[in-house]
Length: 220
Ligand code: DX5
Ligand code: ZN
Image 1: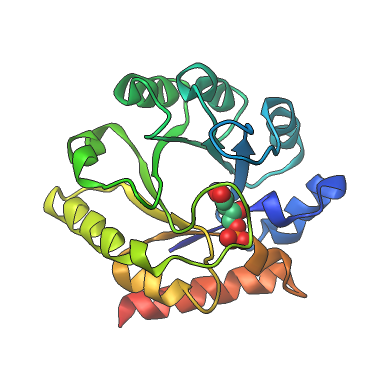
Image 2 (image 1 turned 180 degrees about the vertical axis):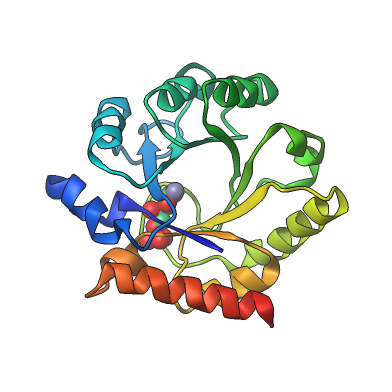
């Protein structure tokens, strides 16, 4: 059970310090890259990721909500991200892209929007290290969790089980102390949380609480 706080909800004027607030408690720092084309929002890009790679010790989990990830994603791996996730809806050649990311030394993640079915990607599972199922429409932090994605999380977990796969199953969007147990019970094992972590009085304590809740729910 891994927790990846999303720095989208952090104070961008003090980004390195905000990362440090959760560093000891977190498995990954989730970095949301948005280009105002694939999603309506615009956040941070490659130069900020390059700087963060030097400033923070927690590995970065870069979630690229951008058009043309085939062109840009490998550079995030080369910048030092430990994991680079691109969207199936945006990639032209997902197999080639996943192989390029892995060759650059990062874990490769494939993300699916709420309306994108997982079954067409079953044969690609051997090419990736993580499958990200969005539990909101991508673009903004602080949106309500979409329960309608949970059946897909269960089906994805079954696909992984059938293949004896070690691919991680990540959920992102609306994950909080109120929703994380449902995600864990459905089979997710990596949890992104932005507003839930950074709106807490003690963000690191919230990360630990989320992990405890996920572990208990999965063990049920
Ligand atoms: C949404 C982003 C998420 C976002 C999650 O498009 O991919 O990572 O930061 O924020 P919360 O946890 O507030 O829904
Ligand atoms: Zn994200």
